[in-house]
Amino acid sequence: MITRSDIESAYERVQSYLRRTPVLKVEGDALGIASPIVLKLEQLQHTGSFKPRGAFNALLAKDIPPAGVVAASGGNHGAAIAYAASVLGVPARIFVPEFAGQVKIERIRGFGAEVVVTGGRFAETFQASRDYEAQSGAVLVHPFDEFETVAGQGTLGLEIEQQMPELDVLLVSVGGGGLIGGIAAWYGNRIKIVAVESEGTATLATALANGPDAEITPSGIAASALGAPRIGAIAYEIMRDRVEQAILVSDLDIVDAQRRLWSAARLVGEPGGVTALAALTSGAYRPAAGERVAVLICGGNADPGWFTG
Image (cartoon, rainbow, N blue to C red; front, side, top):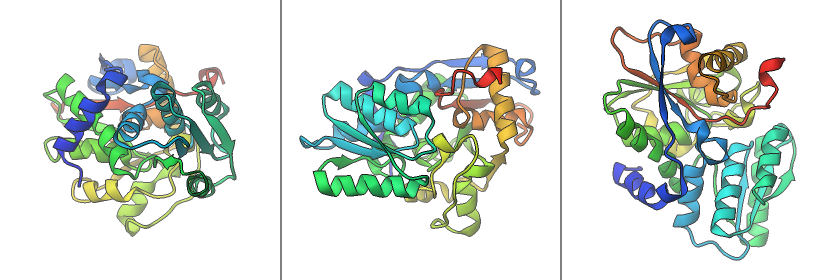
């Protein structure tokens, strides 16, 4: 189990490579909700998502051979590994599925990594990365189900608590669970952590209903960011006694949340990055009176034309 001490060690290891992203209080009426909330703007992190936290922690904690590192990713993890590898001076090869957006593919290439596009399912992409690991000797960094990755993502919990010590509730988008697992490992039961998923990427809801080995076929507009086939074992172990349900929101709810965030604060969030916000703007989560609520905006790698369509 990942401990607070593990996360503190990860933070010491990675903080000099990261931005300390800001928090922003937004009036409820600006977003069309009943009360003000605070946003943690992690889409302003290097590469446009929270993923460099886990990427840097993994690369700095491992012995990297001359073959470098390899990863499988729908986009954001790949960009983070590519960025961390470029900063640390090691080669990187990133395998991506066909459904990864062109914006994210170009981001990965822009950070200097070799990109290999595989079949349409993430399982095929991950297997291709495993095959390359075996063939080349490169170190594989799992996007969500690896100790170093999850501990690195947990540094977000540490940072949020430093910035918002009086927080009651934190809403977090869920894909493979590395992010929410790391944050939950930091907080324990000291605040309420609300898991939010899109209907097409409901790994946690499926696991809670059918067991931790249950798999899905990801679909919908958030799939490139949240499209894991199953919840990670590490995250599930952390969350099974702390999360009673995962709130589900539709693709339409997510698009609406994107538009409201842009209208209220001129901030861009990709679909997976605003899925947690969609729980509030859609009314799927209604804060109790007096609850001090924050939402993690975890990614901003959206197609630049998303709000003009």
